[in-house]
Image 1 (cartoon, rainbow, N blue to C red):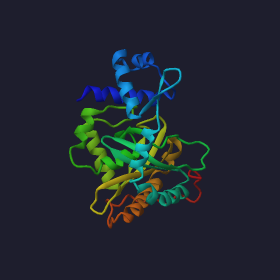
Image 2: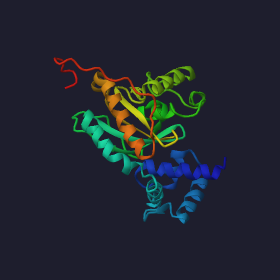
Image 3: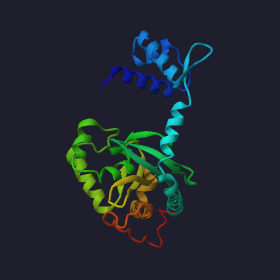
Image 4: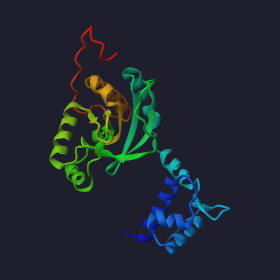
Length: 265
């Protein structure tokens, strides 16, 4: 691995996370790199247009990173296709909808539509999280080639006490997801935050993205089968627009609620 490139990306990530200009001494302290290395790398990044030097002598990121990201996102038309179906999902479930793509063993959230619920689980478009911890990620991982469980177990770990991260447990979890057609996250990335998601597939069964709903665990736990059925329908409709004629094995249909029950109201 080229260490100069590693240092450059580390400095860029540090500047982005900082949210404000940083001097060479600050960057050296925050990254653990020698001042001479920091100065050399940020000077190169400045010459390439990725950072700018302020009047006070500090460094800040430019919009070039945003321009690159926008150029990539402009080629991902999944958001435009999925948007009306996500809106229908929000209307059907009363919960916020999220759209994510798989990037290695992470998911990147590319779109969301928030519900009118007073209490919501917040997330940000563009954020990246470990795929094995969230509903959209597990829904996509379950339809990856065999052996992904071993790679996850080897490279990642738990985020909460509920995280499923051991190889055998992951294999059982992915089998269950394939059987019912959707994934459930029960506080595996953040305590008391749940999610239900299904994979969006192309014409040959390859995973394009994952779509789901998320919110407080206490509220979602009362209606998991209904949410599961709804996200599968949403995913199937989006998949159909990408030429998918068949879907993963049909999910378990939700039972009809008792007429006198008010738990889902």
